[in-house]
Image: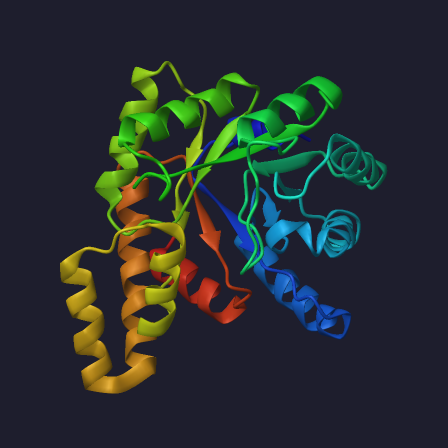
Length: 291
């Protein structure tokens, strides 16, 4: 089933989950046990990442197929433009189709650390190029794309960033999953800007529970998201009071408040970046209560 159709059928807000599969196969049993536990959240779909440059694409295929055929989830495999050719993407999509996987998340992606990409000569320069290729060559697939409430770090303006998001939708994408953010006002402002461009597709807010001061600094540097000063001070106070565990608990409490505010404001559901941590995700679910 296409994820957009599954979203349309929901009569109440829902969860979707994003997993970061381990590269080493000996770690897969523990990973699948985590996924099995998180089925209790009744996710509408499960997003499966792969490494920068598509370096673990085969792992993504095997894990996505297992989620679909052994665990009964509706998976969405990531695709990126980095290092991609039409032949390689077509081959990967054909293999997904053979396994019954029907949904992908089309991303431009980032090159592996220390490498550069000549986007001028790349077969797929923008995520919209990838969306257009999948829609034309594999029309049976559902296609999600990324959105940036705080704008992509490489965009020169909010208006340019919105234009790129609209291009991905007009190229054939079915829905949007946002990059992480920490100010719910950014999400609702993003929705309004998309509506001004005529985009009415579902936009799922991506929520990443803060785990430590070190991790949030690293993540902010990578994705260009903003953190409210009040929240950062709260995390620093937690660190001074109780160290890493207090920061983690403050991060989870903030994620709970975010989710409640988003649902109250009309978000269709919550896309939770799981960090492959079942206890954390279930703690958040229980604290939020029924969506």
